[in-house]
Image (tube, rainbow, N blue to C red):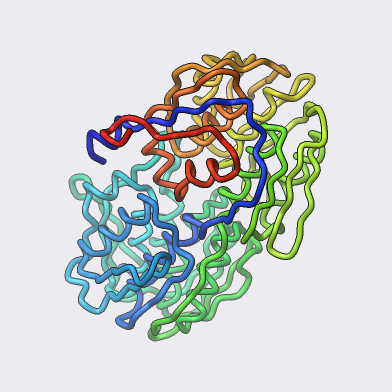
Length: 427
């Protein structure tokens, strides 16, 4: 990002209940693997419902560096063609900016028999080892080596295998799916991730001619095919963005209808919102969230899907600062996901952290001050805190949010939030 990007911040004057409707964009975490999947064919792929956010642009640059063509066709349609891929080495300067860039390894290995990438970067929220990716590639018949800063995977031919993943990594599952679809024979992935984004990738791959069953369960089976063809595919809505706006409605005492949402993907969040005293009304592609009265304390564990999403843990923790009583929040996915607590304390939050557990006392009166986004999701949590705080809150380093949220300040402003972007020459 440029120096001007890092200077941008949000100025938020809190205390205003949100109301109205907000439309959710396509899921970032579904689009990124779908873009990588385009490397599996020489034919055109067209992705619909794609958000224009920084992480998508980084992945597009990764694909272009490999020799693929990527073009926007309208506001939310992305055309990709990988007929002229000229290298199987992912550019390190881009991979370190976006963890999902490592997803090119599986399709490159599957199609060309070779792939190389440095370890992925992205948010600093804890250890996210790529062991499950590499062990899966090795099980499929690839030779793995480390050369300077890059992992290299090579195979004359991939063959189906029975793979047990040490933990249900969604990115690991996606990478192995993309490697296995062109492997000879049958692959079984046990302890696979069940996230909706994994199901979305499997559906796209099947549209391209793959033979995948079991996506959405902990056992996925893949019958390898000789080749894949192009496809058009509409991406699912972003459940994390939808959850963020649902929590924004609740923390401000508002009444918001979220549109273009799949409420089934939010069961764990909606259950906890109801426990906290929030009214939630799912509809046909909509979700109404209304703060019906004082919030009540509750306990939350962030777990792999269908458990409570770790990407919503920080926003939920922010909501619980306004709940009556003591809430306990357990982070079971990433070891540094609670770093945002130090920023919430600057606003007056009463939170004690012990290892992977946060004990939150409430309700506390949050008071606006200067804070800093540490990653995408902590940035969203601080925006929510600013909406609930008295006075003015300035959130710095909002470029983190722009990696994962499409026009978040514009959408909040339309709901009645007093939020504006300042700095970077765009005041």
